[in-house]
Image (tube, rainbow, N blue to C red; front, side, top):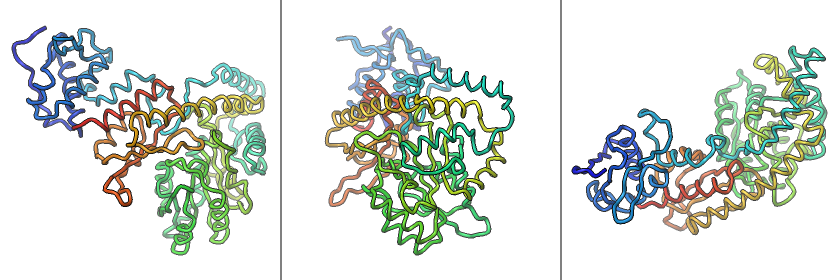
Length: 482
């Protein structure tokens, strides 16, 4: 359909942070509203760029992106047209204002990965038949033995026994069933730790967290009226020298740390730092909350033993999770600590989670006892290691000297540094791509005039095609000339 009048587009009032996104969303909105009808020929890129007063390359990039999504069709020697067969997004006009990156992700990526992905497992690889069988057995057991009533607030005995065996054989942790408490994921463990350490009668209680730390944990400590003090972080993990200075000037109740794969930087705390942290805990009488959220996934060498497995670990509260092995929705975690802490946690659990989840706990215990979780973990470790290597290679291919990545020894995410001038709109673009932009801080590289910033890129839940598409979109967003 040719038209005698050219379509006028107005971008000034749009709220998007970049010209690229403003133009993309405006065209999509005009199509969905019916103002730009199917078959309509658009202005050439040079004409539209002159009309809008923007760079022609930006218009070309928008046209190419919308063509890839199915909104536009390019015909040789004729021009660019609104597609006769629009994407079947089933959107109403209220949902039409989306970023190009968001739409591109929804069109090219399965729904299973369309969630906040800062390092989650691929739920498409769950052995559902094994799960179904284990849940069936658990349901039969609780029915026949009439144990559908309130369970033990510390967790099913069978699961705690299975965890005890795993912790002893795989993590070098020597403990007893009485020192293990089952929780609904590591976040509940963090919350309970904060609850039992909080002393309302004491003013100015401090919890030390790493310079960059897990935001939900920080929010949990703040909600329990702790003051937050941040300790420096480097390539060896938590800076124990800086921590010593903090301890001399504050009354510290606990230090929260993710030593195995630091969140978000993925750095592993060195053994000398671990031993020093334990020594300081004893000297200054504070607890260490060790969040060991993805210990299972270590690729290049044997994992360093957890803090709680080392000498002088009496004041370590060790929090682990099985959610990273299968899926976040599994909500099974555990706490290992001294009896005083565990007993206090039990009392709080009675207030918030008296029933527990006996069926899930029994099912997981069966899978652990039969070695199925170990086999699944071994399989996933190989897949995720390959995805890690592929993601690093793909970033380097697209960004070349504009990116720096040290492949983490383990975990499910990359810490990616971009040698690019930081732009405020990057955070918005990254959020629509389901990439954690919490840590996109502009910083000055020493002895240069260059700014840089970081993102945490979860690779485990993405296959090679998905990794490539997202990195390609990142390249388009970051490198497009505005």
